[in-house]
Structure formats: C-alpha cells, structure tokens
Image 1 (cartoon, rainbow, N blue to C red):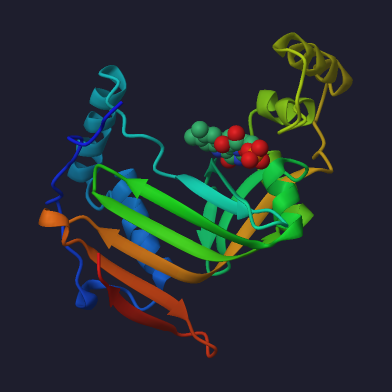
Image 2: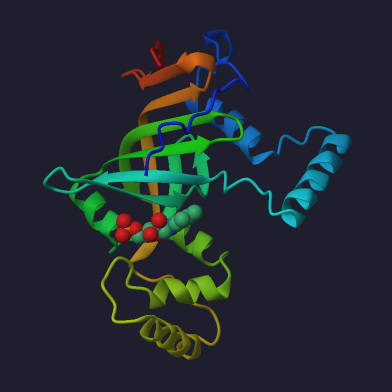
Length: 234
Ligand SMILES: Cc1cc2nc3c(=O)[nH]c(=O)nc-3n(C[C@H](O)[C@H](O)[C@H](O)COP(=O)(O)O)c2cc1C
C-alpha cells in the first residue's frame, strides 16, 4: 500500500499569538466547542445546528466523536502504547476520562503516571496535544459518573476484564447476563473502574495552513502557575 499521494492542503483557519487565551484550558474549551459544533449563541444558530445535526444523522455525515482522544501511556521498560478514550470532562484540574483500572493502560499508569493525549479535529484542521501526569479521580466522583451511564454499560464494566485474553465472545455475554440478574436494582461501582485526570504540564495547539506552514503554539506550565506561550516551527 502506497499512500504517497494522500495529502490535504489545509486552509480553513489560522492561529495567531494575539488570538490565544493565556490559559490553555480556556483555549481548549473554545476549540472543543467549535469542534463539537455547539457554539449556539443565538436561536437561529441553534436551529441551524439542529438542522445540520439532522442532516448529518440522516446522511451518516456526523463528524467523528469530537471528545475522542488518543491516550499514550508508557510501561516500566519505556515501551509506549496508545488507544482512544473519550474525554468526559475538562476543568482547571485537567482532562478526565474513565476506564478499567486493571486494563493495560491502568497497569501502565500505576507504573508510570506520565501520559499524553492528542485530539484531532479534521473538519477544523486542528490538533491539540497535551502531556502531563495522571492521578485517579476520587471514588465519589467516579461513582457519580458511573451511575449516570446506561445500565447496560454499567453491567458491561463489571463483565469485561478489560485487556485480558478471553476464550470467546459467548463467555462475555454469559457473564453480562449473569451480572444483570445479580444486580436487579442499582449496579454498584466496580472497585477496579473509575476516572483518571491528566494534569497538563504542556499543551500544544496546531492549526493546519497551506504548504505545510502550519501554526503551532506551545504552552508550558511555569512554577508560579502561569503559562509560557511560544510559537513552534511546523
Ligand atoms: C471512539 C472510542 C472511544 C473509546 N472510549 C473509551 C473510554 O472512554 N474508556 C475506555 O476504557 N476505553 C475506551 N475505548 C476502548 C479503548 O480504545 C481500548 O480498546 C480499551 O480501553 C483497552 O485499552 P488498553 O488495553 O490499552 O488498556 C474507546 C475506543 C474508541 C474507538
């Protein structure tokens, strides 16, 4: 397979130092809302977005999950692994996602709390990269989110020994049915399931530009809590 001719020329936007927020988490929120198409400021805009969503759903044109991010972790021997997870919230503490603490990523994060995330929003020709350290969310916060999930997913979290080798799918489905009977009412939070929060030390905003002269700005957290902003070569 040769993909040498697969290329796009990016021309949908530009990024300038003067347009950047001093706080990268605020900058992220602006970009995220644009990627998610939710900047509903006026009624007409809301109607426009609703029509766009309907058109997207009918025509299968929906952009990919804008909260999907690639999470990179590293094991004890320095070998990396990546996978997609969903961002479930972002605030001054950092970026929150949920998973199984016994999974490969969970084991790697227990060994090495340094991790990185990448968002790619092709419709906007934008990328955001984040690097920092990860900690578990308090169990009460994980429980609150867990109980907001559909019942089927809650049972799924109990049923799946994430990242372990299993003999077949039937075993997984049988386990799910057994657990469904075991928890006729509320499904408790599994002890090995919950949230992580990535506390950013470095963030980078990338806007595609023509001729590969893209705009890139890096934010580095300083000891006093402010951020140093620098333009990087593309
Ligand atoms: C779009 C998308 C979203 C996903 N979101 C999550 C998530 O939020 N949490 C999670 O544990 N796995 C999620 N997964 C599955 C992971 O990519 C991965 O298969 C799983 O977490 C096991 O990874 P690990 O073996 O590296 O720990 C998602 C996969 C895709 C494609």
